[in-house]
Image (cartoon, rainbow, N blue to C red; front, side):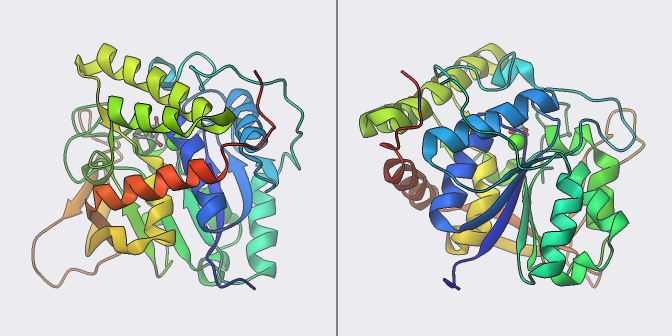
Length: 315
Ligand code: BDR
Ligand code: CA
């Protein structure tokens, strides 16, 4: 046992998911990767998870999860991450294969067999909600859940709705109302402090080798999408924040709050309501609200540099 945290990352790569996987594998023991339909359809995000694993030499097994949310119709973010979810880099020929197409069952078996694993969902919460419904005992077996989703302020796929929360709010509700003792939230109010800009692209490109170039090409594509959306070449590096909350908790300042998710509002479905009032209401979430940006950026760059010259990439 290494003493490092053990993580299962549940993801929908996605540019920021890809960097979160690199961070997780360098800074923690990555027990496995599970996929969920989100940024792109399930078949695409699963292929992307395999490609990212190949490019950066990540050996954790990839298990395929849910194609669609619990209740809602699926929706994607192709306008941000590209038609197949990983626009920008030249993708190598795929040499890897999935370990199973039963991610939910695999999470249940793995967390029952081995206590103290963190679940780190950085896409819609569908798989995790299914785990908790099928196996409520898992709530007591895991170290906690550290998720990217929601916002303590403005949204990105609606005035107040963040993408992951909006895609499957019913699933997020299952997690927020579960008895899991430690739930850490990296919402947009935190993740927009992890600034993606030309300087980040330049520093990734300067790392060189296959991995530095792959990451820089992802960021270049993401920045183009940000220009299309807001007119500014700037965005947030969302998903690595949920990993950092476990691997490097000192870079995030959190406050325990009550957080709920809106399931019914016409304008507010998918909104996370972070109760910031003082009072005696029971808290259920450690709401990350302040990021040490310089430290987070350094850790991310070092993680990519540590894996830049793995030879699983393409041209
Ligand atoms: C979240 O939505 C996705 O597009 C990103 O990968 C991230 O998980 C940000 O709202
Ligand atoms: Ca994601």
